[in-house]
Image (cartoon, rainbow, N blue to C red; front, side):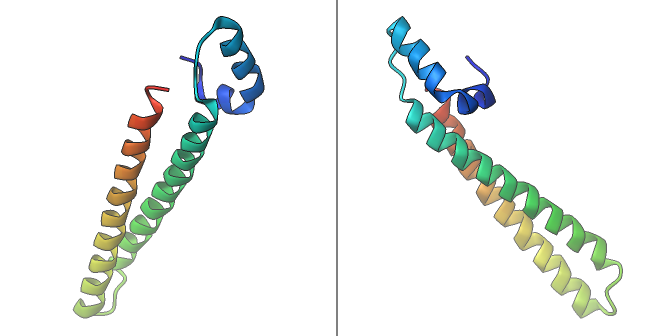
Length: 98
């Protein structure tokens, strides 16, 4: 398997090489799925940063109500991160056979 980054950067070359070898590959689908995966990965990283910032701010909360509100916000970010990670996993299972 070729490196995903290489494929994205050299789609025409890879497509020509596959055609010359008689290998049928839907490279456009691969590119589409990989770009989606990369976007979702960036989203996961952003959500993780936000959840970490919220976690750090819990100790600075003025009262128990603020702490609970921040804990809940952190939980929501982590749940959203898990949902997006599940989408990444689904994309991975679609990409791998390609």
